[in-house]
Length: 123
Image (tube, rainbow, N blue to C red; front, side, top):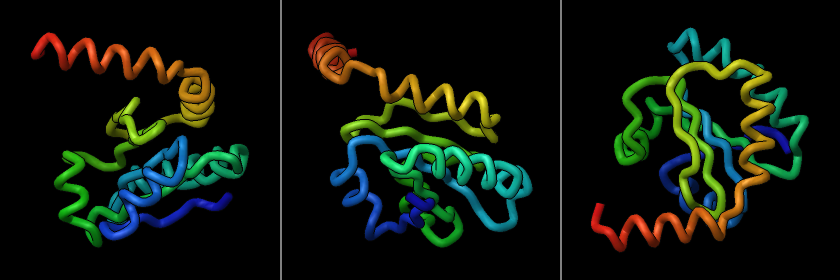
């Protein structure tokens, strides 16, 4: 699957309709974003069963703000609508490929249990 462009009107639906979504927050003027783009696209091509998407922070300022984007590029990974990973900066290809495998192997029952336990403690 090719890289998908997300907007304020499509972001929530794409997360709801797909199990795993990698999101690259970027802008046209951002040099590191342009360096990371081919890496992101290559890994997307190698994993057609996952959704790889981009959000142009300049075109979607409210969405970027609500996601807490303060630096670009920022990579976020959602699984079952749960944010599992968020990191600013360009990610090297090998690290992104490793992250794909880590996200695939996450036990979401354990994640939800940990979230419930954390919410129950009030911390």
